[in-house]
Length: 282
Image 1 (cartoon, rainbow, N blue to C red):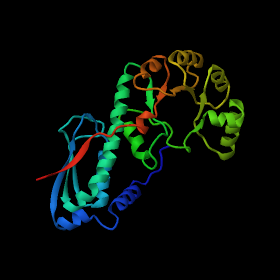
Image 2: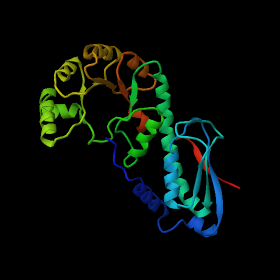
Image 3: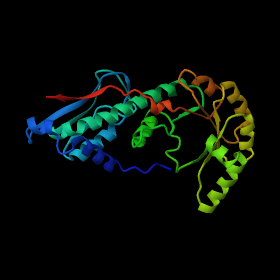
Image 4: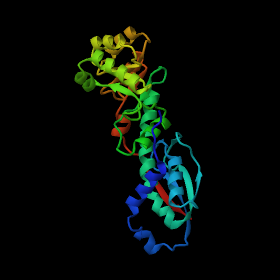
């Protein structure tokens, strides 16, 4: 299930937060009729993301602004590359500038990190997943950036997957008890949702395998050797996901153990933004 997101409303709120009662810097020194041009300048190597978001921001600020793409989302870039040009009312360009950069810089940073991890998985069948460790109200952009970087989105929120983590299981009294209630809930509400169960040891893996309706088993804080044992025992009956403290430096052995997915919160929660700027041109 794709997350529901009102991009127009988000842009309107973000612009209102920034402008307040007026962009007094531009109002005080830029003539209302001034027509100018600017371009997006790449200042460090990475993977570009957010081009369509930039277009939406410019359009919302001023539909008469014209943005011309020179690069595409997902494209590897280097310092000096020009992502796009935009032309039209100078005040409108200045009003849109910071929101465009804030979103594109963060999205490009996430896409860059994700693409780097995807390269580390080359030659295996393992795919990289993001998590819910996203910035509040920016989840749409951050998860889009993961896809642009070649990753796969995990659940978008609490509504599109049943994910029984350790606390759910402990509160419910165990995996069997939790899954009995899940099956009843899905039947009573008429919902059809994938169900993932987090496991902490092989005993819990076997408990999860015994339950009807489990579609994926998470192997939480397993070592690569332990993942291999679990994957062999699961033997393709359900999907498998390794999670817990996995980094780009340690991910390859997990993939070589045969797990279907590796989830990594660091794709979104601690990423460095890519250095981009919007420069006026003549």
